[in-house]
Amino acid sequence: MEFLIANLAPVMFLTLVFFLLLGFPVAFALAANGILYGLVGIELGLLTPALFQALPQRIFGIVANDTLLAVPFFTLMGLILERSGMAEDLLETIGQLFGSIRGGLAVAVVVVGTMLAATTGVVSASVISMGLISLPIMLRYGYDRKLATGVIAASGTLSQIIPPSLVLIILADQLGRSVGDMYRGAIIPGFLLAGSYIVYVLIVAWLRPQNAPAMPPEARDFHEPNGHSGIRSLVVLMLFSVAVSWFISGHLNDETSPIDEKIVIGILIWGVTALIVAVLNKILRLGMLSKIAERVTFVMIPPLALIFLVLGTIFIGVATPTEGGAMGAVGALIMALLRRRMSLSLLKQAMDTTTKLSCFVLFILIGSTIFGLTFRAVDGDLWVEHLLIDLPGGEWGFLIVVSIMVFLLAFFLDFFELAFIIVPLLGPVADKMGIDLIWFGVLIAVNMQTSFMHPPFGFALFYLRSVAPRDDYRDRVTGQMIPKVTTGQIYWGSVPFIGIQLLMVIAVMVFPGMVMHYKAELTDVDPSTVQIDVGTAYGDDDIYGYGSDDNADPGAGFQ
Image 1 (cartoon, helix red, strand yellow):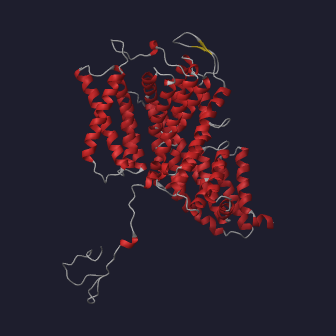
Image 2: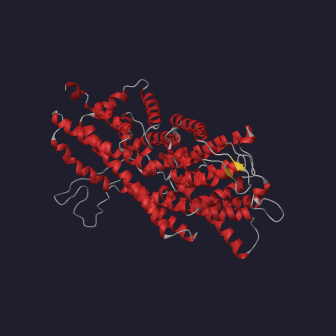
Image 3: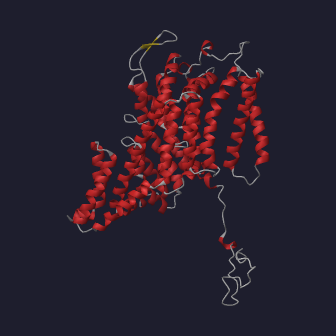
């Protein structure tokens, strides 16, 4: 009994791990452990029954949290876009654009995965869409199966680190930080990770050309009557749009404008300029643009406009993440209507899935709140703090141990479970050690991204396995027999990309400026320069620095 009284917190945590390993639902395992050990603590005299009186207020606080409204908004936006055929058009267009170079199809998959991540934020939608559309094409033209499956799974997981990621919303909420700051901090590591995938693909294509061949000329659909590819026209259009954007944004912005605002306005003007030129060329039949230039403009500009609508308004401070998510959901519905892909059944499916995922997140959060209430009441937070703060190496030792622990736990737990169970325990310790919590959250987010790629439980691998061919089949274009994709090939294909993700974890840890740039626009105030003039009392009618003169300025005493 004395042992239980002295070690109730670690026993409580180990019991939770035991129930999770048995396969109990996470939300109910958390809630049940919280209530069970709360009753045990009351029986042992460690706690009072008044502890549970705080529970209803905590749960109502979760339901009233406006930040969490962004979760259903971004989920609905992603599902509508995924079902509206946007991914299919992007893959076809960008595949044609890069198809002439070795590894071009894999590069196209990474580019599309990045764009889907910045518009949908849903891993399952990205992986399944790209697996259904691009995997058969890559197999048709002789891509190595490990490279093809690995690049699809890895590109789909970019939705977890590139805003508007659902994981970043949850992490910001659990760490008590702004979602907008978390988005700003994650943007550079996210795009660097996508760039690292492209570099890896190009290196493989250079060292082993047979693993990533270029598309044959007969497979490229967008050709000009003279036989040229039309890329020169696209380059000229992009350069013209960039020049117009630089000229106009240079007059709209001044030197004091924040960097985020300059970038967002510049991208907006660039996209609008390219779209106007393409529309005028098509309506007036000017013949200035090639087929590929028109196709790229009409396919890529709408998603970029949606990215501006969501992320741009958040970054420049016009909208909160919740409002940005709402605008994104409306924008996705409008895009689906304009593409004539919207139907009542599609909307019903998207709303059903959104409701299920939102309830899933909410119930896990309620369960973690119940668990956390009891765990902190029995000094579990102090136990974790003493366990981690005395590690050798100080801050670096803490970060290395936490990174290894999150990486290993990701083999068994998904990102929501890690965010709701582990982060509330680690966040206070990191804060007490003086670690910036936005940087800490992005570091954990990049690490948790590997949970989708871990064999044998990685969800991205399961999603890809569900759409990859299980049997040999005859290709409908070439008529050749294509061998099946094995589960082992999918698992081995993920290993190099897990290594790239771990290198990015190290890079974020070693170069914190990749994340800490979000503070660059904050104005530092020197307290020694602040003056408060309390004035001189002139009588009973005087009020803090100004007398009975009715024309006196009440704010004149504050400088």
